[in-house]
Length: 268
Image (cartoon, rainbow, N blue to C red; front, side):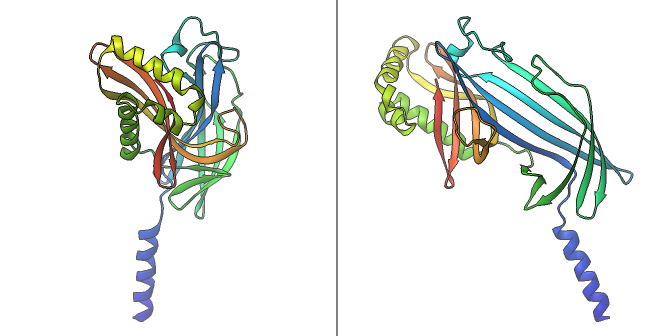
């Protein structure tokens, strides 16, 4: 009887602690910041995702890789911004897809990926078949040196930090905000521009977030483009700043550092 009870307890504990491999998983790299004269700035992102399903004891899925280059700040959308190849359009994309044949192997999955149909205006990389092995560790899907997380809503604390920073920027603390982002060299010029914006836009009344993309890694030599990456949790916010007489678009990179959030870059 003792052995039966012990076996039942082991089975219950194993079931309670098992971490399912099925479902959606996501990993995002901020590849770098591209600067093109006169004042045209874009962010390069690479987004990877697994969608794994199980039906009738058979596993299958889809793997996607999205390269997205997106302008930040209103000046970056102007006609005088001439972006270099291979991404000549202001917003450029390449999406690659793979269909997955999945075979469980203990607590791992062996995956054979066959190319599917892609899309986009860029042709940076070929879509080729590949094989890989994935597993779950500490709530993350491990694929080589890539750690995939479950998709989730952006941090409320990061959103609050963004709003606090914009409020300080518009409430007399412009020089302080610029210094916190390491841009004391252009602080006076930037703050003078903000004062002139306020003269025709009116009083700042708040912001509305358009999108929030969480990322997991940045280049070791950030903000320059690089293939060598390091862990850095952050969020790219696109938003509209609301003024009494005008709406002004903006973008921000908010980094998590030591358990708190900091606005590291702001285009507004």
